[in-house]
Length: 313
Image (cartoon, rainbow, N blue to C red; front, side, top):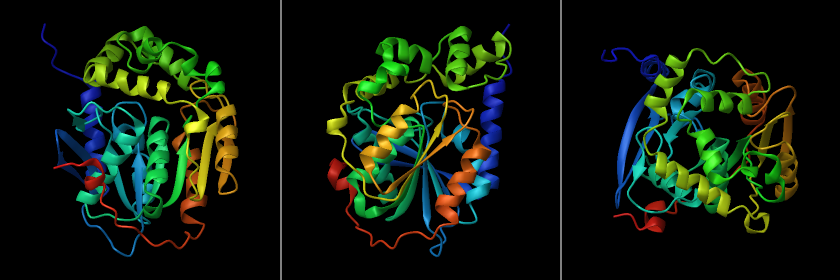
């Protein structure tokens, strides 16, 4: 019998409606040289409000990660939510897979949207990209929030996801059967929620975990290959690091290493009784204190064009 209903596709449509109702619209642009970037952008950009860029992790797409945050942030910020390359509707035919290239593509997208200065928030893999943006485009970034982002890969990796081979890691992050989905949930949550029957898990796999599988594997390989702390630049922006006490993907020791690496401009919040998947309500409490309740630093922008850096046509 032909399949006629997808719970995952329905949930995706609900998130799309939620984003639209919150004042965002879908925007897709061709950067040239085979690269296309998709982003949720404000229907009206209010010049009197600062801009906040939300960068998702290694999951379905940006909507699934940030649906909770948009209504909380829209009154204070012009919120932009891009899909990274090979997630959602963003892709490239170029061979680069590094976090630095992801960062350059995001900033080329922001150039196309005429957005110069911004604060950043990156979750997990998105934190790697956010950190790279802050390092490469110093004068354009005000404040940085990093959620469970194991940017300081190195000697600590034997305790986290990267203690596994790249193939094992991708089999967990891009599950192809229900048991691998359950393994991902067990690793992500300190107290894992019920995962439901196999039919729902197979539906999620079909809709969210099959496209660009090879390219996503290459993204993970690139992270694994570029994991020496000595190669990591120091960012200077005010930075909030948020971590789960029992994170099994990127253990909390990485949070302390990252804070030490950045120095005095970084503050660390470790949330008790949570793993890699942080509860949005708890996370937003700390984001609000850092981004909304505290006055932003005064900073002049630099209009360096990311298209030129990338040699996009």
